Image (tube, rainbow, N blue to C red):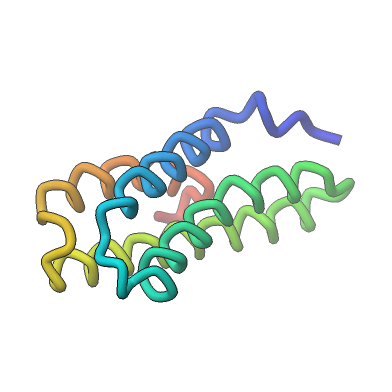
Length: 111
């Protein structure tokens, strides 16, 4: 079993998720069950899937969970872009946060 806490990418994902929580506190109330919850769940999913994958005994299973985490990172990226288009956040904030997701994309060396 791997210690997920030692992975830099897991630590970055945890920090990223807490940033998303702080950011979405300022979203409109009518987004409580929309983008706010979607962004929060997807961002938490990144670190959670890394941790869950680390508990798997085979490399294949671990890689599958890393792929799921990567998918969640792309999901968050999409939701941030939508949030900017709706003017809930500025494009500068999106760029800053997406810079952080580039670090998360080290989950897969194909990107």
